[in-house]
Length: 163
Image 1 (cartoon, helix red, strand yellow):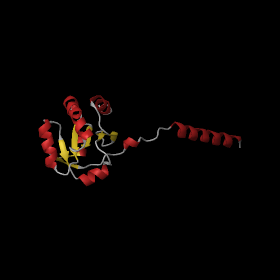
Image 2 (cartoon, one colour):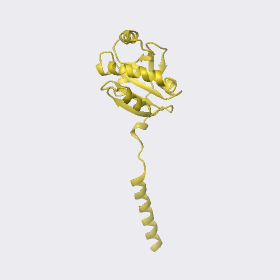
Image 3 (spheres, one colour):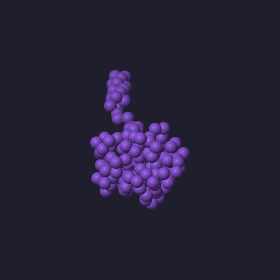
Image 4 (tube, one colour):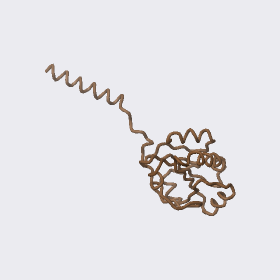
């Protein structure tokens, strides 16, 4: 009987320790939805196709969104700095792809700009507010997410999570 009591106490102690000290799965460990991307100033791609090669910075934006337009120079600067280590995809949610194309030309942007199925992208990536940035690892897992504009320092700190 005494051995049974000791066994029960030991099991309870181990269970309690496991519950208290076990690391809960990270909410950011969820898989990124794969979507087709239609190139505005580059070729067509898929999110998994890009993220499978190296980590990916995915940014949802629009030409009519002041914070989106405001962070675009910082994104371009980070693309120039880290484009060899990260894939960049700036996905325009403008109704017309031509609007994004004109914006890209007028700002001489070189970072890859895409569009796609706006309804599907909006639902899958929870685009209630833009700009919205997502870091995706080579395994397709979401590493980090940010909603709102970022300056160059904030963007570099965000990207460091994937570098």
